[in-house]
Length: 294
Figure 1 (cartoon, helix red, strand yellow):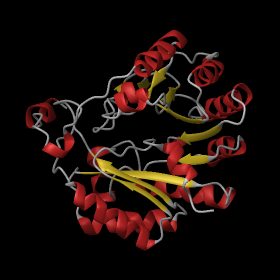
Figure 2: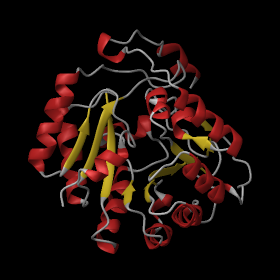
Figure 3: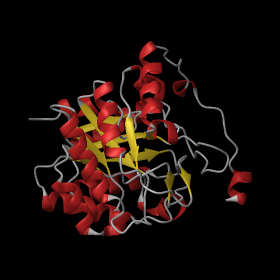
Figure 4: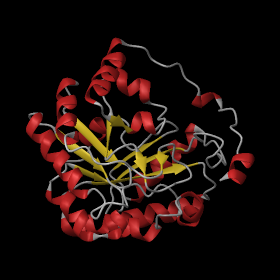
């Protein structure tokens, strides 16, 4: 990583990635709720460019199992190292925060916890149950890690009946050793395929970043692989380098190319596609779910 730091200076963003940050009382209210509940969000920990917008709209993506990941994906801003103990009250505090924020669509993700026997699968299930109990009529979308390929842990999450199950492919197969050295392209696809086998009615979602050095033909292969695995909900967004210690941006993809990818993905068979420079896994997730084909 020292060599990477020297080779990856931050470069100026193009005009389409520069925008004014919204300001609203709701933003401070959400920050206050999260701070008071001692909760983490992927919005903050991953330096999401949509944080101000989403907080101003009284939405956030909850990050469970702490704020320290056991993996070191070279595109991700979340801290990595040895995680601390799990807070037994975290699921109920998430439910309380979701109720205080008047959420009806709750998105939950986690750091990867390879140190836990079940990778945190039970914590996802407990959080789903807590939100359903604490927020009347709430829908829950989960963005899960790969659980190192363990089907029993995936089943633990599926049995809790999330309304959408998301697992990000992130990038094309060739770039996995560089961008995701502790993950496996085939393992992620197999996880998604198992969701289809175990729960055919459960909507399956996945996302990819563009701008890491992928080739168009490789993206098309990855989209086909996702379709073959049963994924029909897709997000495509621009990779943004969090710091000089992370992988450099190979290319800033212009908005019109994201539009073209959206049209191609829909033509290939995806039923819903969000594609744009600022799109992230849970960006406008409630609207994405509500607009799904009946």
